[in-house]
Length: 407
Image 1 (cartoon, one colour):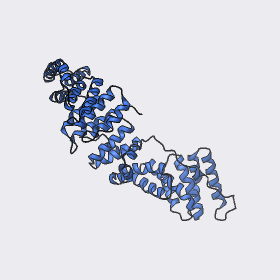
Image 2 (cartoon, one colour; image 1 turned 120 degrees about the vertical axis):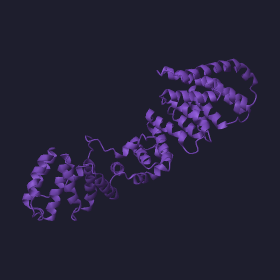
Image 3 (tube, helix red, strand yellow; image 1 turned 60 degrees about the horizontal axis):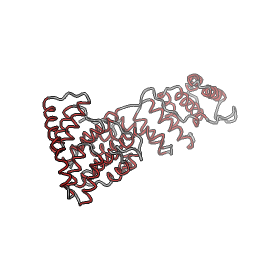
């Protein structure tokens, strides 16, 4: 089974997408007045001043030209080299020449005379230039250094994570999210791109349980049909999955419009018929037909059988209602109403069932009553009841909670 998110790890940023760079701190270099600093010769300062004026006029290519001759000199002292390379790095960034910017700024960061207070800004620019150049190892190196130097996490962390993903360093990427992965609430609070990145790494590492957890967080954050399909197709294959809940998985697939082919509809109808719910089987096959799927001979025969049994159930319903005395009797009656889409009658019968005792498969009954409440428009009551479902059905109850409107 393919992983929906598995292609993300190798995805690079779109070529046309440019990140806004924190260049202001780099531009304000505090150039000394001519002659005020003996370590700067007049002609070097003149070239630097001219370049800075071009930068201020948003002409970075011209700024690089102003600096070209002086940068080519071999007799620059360390202070002059720092000044010209720093300006060249800024100009190259503005001119969308990330490789040239990297070359200049890597020389700057290696210079011992660079003031310590200026290092974070240079490291930030190096991180950005590396990302623009699509150089993942360098992006990782400089982003880590920048974070260690106190650069803003919200700006640098996405660059670092993307670099890890591109390099296939999935374990390291997940380690960066260890706090969120240990706390479902914090995981759900992450933005969709971060969740997709986590899911891609989990897919690469074959962490199926973690991948499902991330899909659930994605559904809470940014529900989509694709996420639902990916998740629901995986649930029955999870270790410890209770086969009794297979029909309930199909119910969620039907509700999220992720059933596509006739065999899926037919399989759900067979499970409903096997569970003694022919009215639901009829409804499912009619949904398939309404979707434009032509019933083949086996599906048509299944519809005919289910229709006959559904009519028999409807005829027997008054007697079943009269005979309902204990929890199991009321629960069975509730299921028949549920299968026929009579949501108010179904949830009322389950209320009678729990008032009379504890029906068999009580947690499934709570799940189904919660669905009936949801379908009848009683969102508050549905949320309260689904939140109380325990046992094997609890995971499905949590997914149904995602189908409720935001409170």
